[in-house]
Image 1 (tube, rainbow, N blue to C red):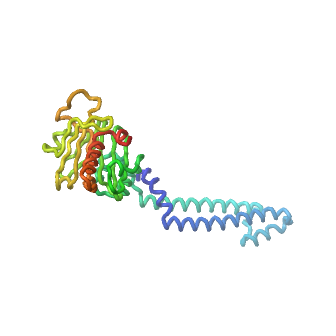
Image 2 (image 1 turned 135 degrees about the vertical axis):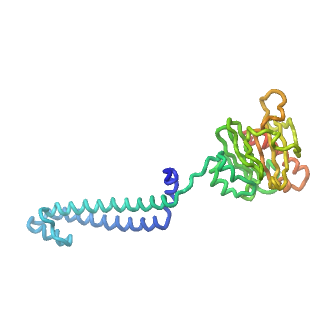
Length: 302
């Protein structure tokens, strides 16, 4: 078994019913042993006041057994004290063995890195926030975003980042309603973003592979400090009726980018802006989503 998985299972194993029984037995054994050790030490100190010829009889009566041949009363008591110490050590060892045995039989899986294909494959619109966190871990950034989107309901924004990659997630009612995958790294981020499509590699796959009839297209979208090319698609059932935004942050690049350029961000979003009843507010919400796909997290959060 992987040592990391075993160690990860110890906290849960330590709170199991079997571990509780082991704790109770350990406490009972420790109390009994401590009492016997103290009593024997008191007996050992008392022997100094007892005549030598009477000590064997006193110790035999106290121990409930005659002294072994060749041992004095003092040696016999010291032997019993060390024996109790050994029993105390064995009790702790047995308790620890029980906990490790429970952990070994119920290993706790180690969550994959948030930017691994395995972790990202479970990220979908509608997935519960609690489940996402079990797969990706606790994000370093978590804040309210309702005001930015103009939504009438509470929306939570969370971000993961590292290694030149970013993941931004928007939750409503503790469920995923939108997310952005962004990659500035060499290898990109791998994810199957819609049904029946091949793996999309953020930062590698071309704009031309997204489709040929975008609902929205802008080659010079300004958002914050960024200038982006962005295309928005709707794939119907194969895309689970979500909106897909493909964006390339062009800030710092020279000249126009060609169609074969690769978006360094992909956003998948449910129809969250329709919650806003006035047309201007809904349009502003959609503009914010495009901006979220366009720019880096630090620019968007600022």
